Image 1 (cartoon, rainbow, N blue to C red):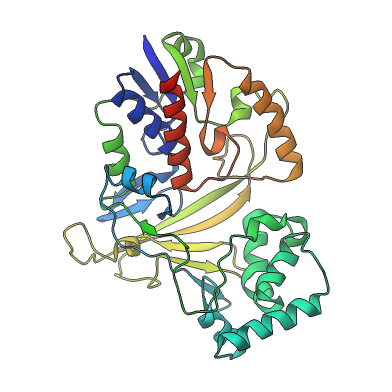
Image 2 (image 1 turned 90 degrees about the vertical axis):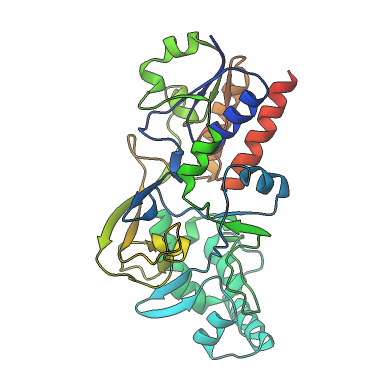
Amino acid sequence: MFDYLIVGAGLYGATCARELTDMGKSVLVIDKRKHIGGNVYTEKIEGINVHKYGAHIFHTNNKTVWDYVNKFATFNRFTNSPVANYKGEIYSLPFNMYTFNKMWGVVTPEEAAAKIEEQRKEASFTEPSNLEEQAISLVGKDIYEKLIKGYTQKQWGRPCDQLPAFIIKRLPVRLSYDNNYFNALYQGIPVGGYTKMVENMLKGIEVKLDCDYFSNRNELDSIAKKVIYTGPIDEFYDYCFGNLEYRSVRFENETLDIPNFQGNAAVNYTDPDTPWTRIIEHKWFEFGKDENGQELPKTVISREYSSEWKLGDEPYYPVNDEKNNELYKKYKEKAEQESKVISGGRLGEYKYYDMDQVIGEALEKAKLLLAE
């Protein structure tokens, strides 16, 4: 008999497992995949830690969370500075003075701000009501048309004027030459990869992989006093109200016998005609070197294709529009009536979380459980 069965060996499950175990609780962690780490899982290929489920760059302003993850990994000094490729034209992301200079030839912040304001006024709306209007309000029509519109429609599978404005409100726009995409005090990649970090988090804790909770539900429920469930909340209730919608991502991975493919970890392809949204070159997350500081002779790239999710696909991004949020409320109300089961994490709460937010939520949940 375990005190807790934790369904999912990603960051939420691993954090809860570590905290509860350290306070004397008995814990079993299961995962339907053949590996730990959830979507932050990294696999070593040609000496390179490949992010198998898309690029994950840890960033946070939360010192408590930063101190916590540093107990399990040493983080390098990687700074996220992606670039945009529009039909062979290269622009800086985040949008900053390099972007504005390339787009308009402006040199001073005052000139850039004036150009954005001019295009905002030409758009003739007062309060942005959708993503398109929000983007034009932030950076003007030219940048929206070249660097946002095509990419976003590929990413979400919907025209920008049909997407909510909040999706793009976090977009960094700077009247400076700061190329750091994140406004975060702490940032980096775990040396040795995320899998190594999660292994350290789960050290001494019983873990069963390739174990599908729904195939053995009654038996698994019977061996624990409480269940922490981190999978899709609608699946937990057998889609009784209908299924929530997600965007999914497909990856085409390629190992190349060259040391450098694109010279940057992330390049976004923003025109609508290129089928992929971006190409990740994984070695640059760790500066092109192995853990001993040796240059790596080969490289691994991943082309990312965004797609509409269907049952059986891997869910990545919740589609938090009005329809889906209303549907989630029904599942949330049902979940709140549970006495034995706690739902958490990105899928359990149907919410887009950054990694630091997932860990912060799990730390708070563990604290509440231990106070019961």
